[in-house]
Length: 181
Image 1 (cartoon, rainbow, N blue to C red):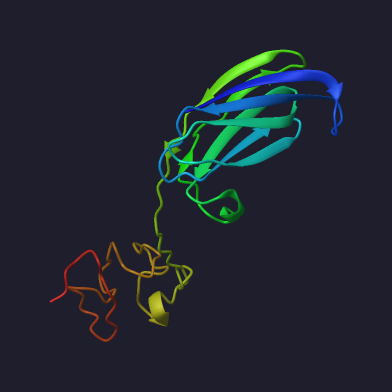
Image 2 (spheres, rainbow, N blue to C red):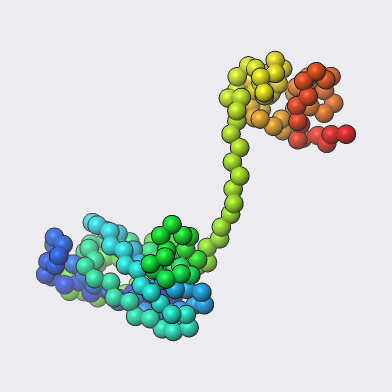
């Protein structure tokens, strides 16, 4: 968990209008976390990356926050901050925490980071595009005929589409819905 206390100041800084600061505290950095990234998004976005050490506490100061309604999110990475570009975070705060940041007022909030997962996703493109020619250009197939599913693989075979049990033996096509001999 990251505890953030923010305090706004009434003076303009390097940005237009009032700005606020926040202090984030981590009681114990989890194993395999080398960088914590905190984003505050309101009238403008501010992202700060902080190198941290596993097993130690950390106090992270975020400067020049926008005032008004600000959404806070955080992510943690296994590598140092200079190596996080293009990598997936190991931890992420799901829904943003929204707080009203006012000049001269301290606002407390809590962000809970949860482990992230990953997946390798295969993508298949429908190459027949639903044309009347069907899969692979065969005159009979599932591509655009009534009862066809429009896919490259015939998961819901129609009669005479070349799949298992079909009488169209001149144009065999794979039917995944039925086992082949």
